[in-house]
Image (cartoon, rainbow, N blue to C red; front, top):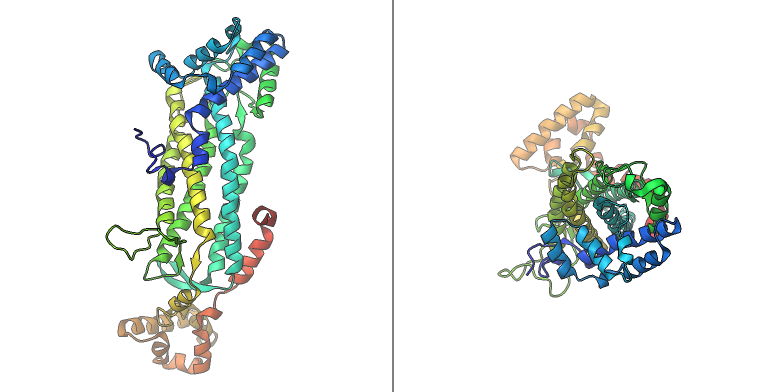
Length: 454
């Protein structure tokens, strides 16, 4: 039986995806270690450091399928060491004594750091693919609803009319910046290292620099300018950006939740036959997908905090700090991918109730248009006086249970300044969305359309 939500068959789908779970499976982790050992042997042979026959045998045997993982786990417990048992297992697979040349120079952290980066690079492809998919859905919604009027809300209450497209365009802009952040950190993140026990490369001899370049080139990674064994900012930055992405996705999901409540009813996540909302209330259609995204957006913040803590290593290497990454980084990638996949699903089939949005604009009985009326009245009496009179009328109307139009007409100054026809026009919320449609158009024109429309 498993105890982690990332591995439990009954809960796993809420915390990760099958594809991302496979990236951080133990088999793939060990395989990435073996990939480094194979690349190292091949390049050492090319430089005349070890025999070519040994390199060929090491590369041939560097397959996780050749390793007994159950036995390996037992050895890790016995030795209290993560890498040495794996090196010994590979050595035992090699014939004719060629295993003596396995792991010829690197320290353990060279292996699991570089292996982790290889896993993150693999995860990165999945994350970028689905970040783009979410952006495409937001692009589509922003364009489709550039003119769909709805109530804009501040402090959780109605403020002024906006358009739903404007709301989606803001979300899209945020996602685009996250996309740029992820692209920008690739060069900093996807670097391995072969620096030895304290970062001086003493164990690699005179070919240390060229060997590191060749091995990393073979693995498709960059080369750091200096040891990053005690400098964990690269991976910390990566998870921090995932945390920011999680914050954006959680915000969008929470907004959908708030706007899908029965009392609001403006949005609804997709529903399919068989989806159940309650064991006792058969009528319920819960926002289960976006609700899960909100949960994950909160949980991923803990991974960010752990990665920040992992930066506090001591001296030239501190595995007590680095081991925090072994938990925080995979879990952050898994949660981020789950959120992206769920939000793509929610946005692709998002129900947008235009009629309910229009109806909710009248929910306050016209008071939503106080700003517009104030500025119109200011033309006759000045802005500050207009604010005081509209404020007084609004408060009296709210307290007296009257519409905004009725309350305004109770004030003779307002009644004289604004004719009934002018006032009726001013109280139409669909004609006071400002420049929202044009702002949406400008944002969509400015963004890299190829990113969202391919």
